[in-house]
Image 1 (spheres, rainbow, N blue to C red):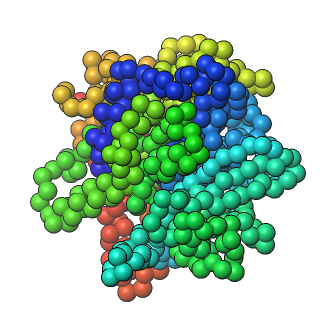
Image 2: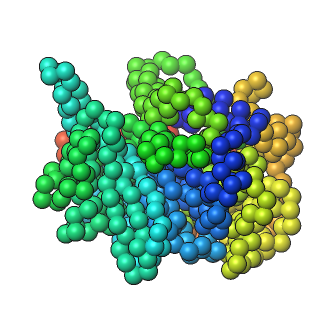
Image 3: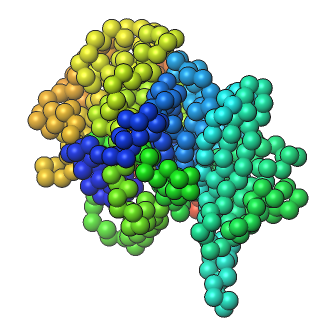
Length: 590
């Protein structure tokens, strides 16, 4: 939890200030009063399979914008890694009609079908990438169709991502020295041309950058523009070892030169990996786009990092909290800190350049722990219901967040997505079941089939929240205004989701039990079966074995690709599995 804890230390002061007093946004409010739409810039960070949670959050925000076009214009979207994929999807969604059924949204169709077996193809495994992007072919059809035929005429959106270079390029400095650049910022403008027409896509360069900037040849009429943008989304999300580096054709364009002159013939290929290594929160990129668009005083910023929540992280196990006694442990802690600070440099730099931007920023916080947090953020790949629960939790978190303290909910007569024309009780049942669990509203939605499948997930979700809060020592980071976290710390048990098993007396974390162990144990208690992993009955031991077996297959395949280093890879991989999913050690509390 190095990353989550570090993010909290960086951003909690801003979150706390936002909760204490809603942002004034005087210029924005004046624009709304004059009948002008408030511009919204959204930034989404990386998060591996937490991208499913981000997708639900962005679906809800996107629908708010489309249902209230005279009030809000979500016209700048930036992201990194999973956030880069999701902001690309959001860019297309923004220019399509409202979609009242979340299950029919581009967001849902992008994340829900993609499981472990779709991505892990043993014969395609290489030393530089365990997973295969070919599995994405099944979800790209709706995205390509939307891009090429469905973007509304007059709709304009700017999409930007950061991608890390596999090898740095060098920029001359003062004629005698060249400084390395390890990442590139890509921005394109997408302009819809109406039904049946491809959009106009234009690359950006910033006028005030003192070195040549990389652009894609998206204006070349002879290239597959959608494929280029798809590969850019793949590049920013190419997490090292999990996915292979992505090769992109790029031109280097100096300020003042025409980026549209870049063609496939004049470009040079370079390989890229996950942008989060250098900039996991590209909100400064959004800020620069907004400034060049001339809407600096009429724009509100929404920042989404799935790891930020209104609850403490899971308590460290004895091993994780022990005093550093090995050089490897020290180096791992230092490396984690370096990656954290490096990934947040854009956000910190923006706060240094323009402290007042905080007054126009809302920082999203999850209302309850997502399931996909486990296995270093990759748990969602193993089971469809994990991804689906996180998707609807993201929708609910966006609803709760915006309703409570965002400028987007500060106006009366707002059209809300679950009340829009065409929204059905069945389609929104998981959302309303989660809402009923946390807010005590009518729980009848939990009886509908769409919600019943997720009831064990919803129940274990709130048990995880109570368990994490209960285990947090007094005087440390608490619930950030979460009434449920406060109730857990006061000794109250978690509420029972309508239709779920009774939580019983053993819902809390056992001594020495990791969050992953606790999650598997409680899911088994509530009858959940990991069918995607080949299980046929609910069993803590069975699900533990299935998860370990699945991870072991990846380690075995990766070891085979590393020749003389196979034994070292095998040993390190097996140690990693033991840390993520111990073979079995927790005992009931007597």
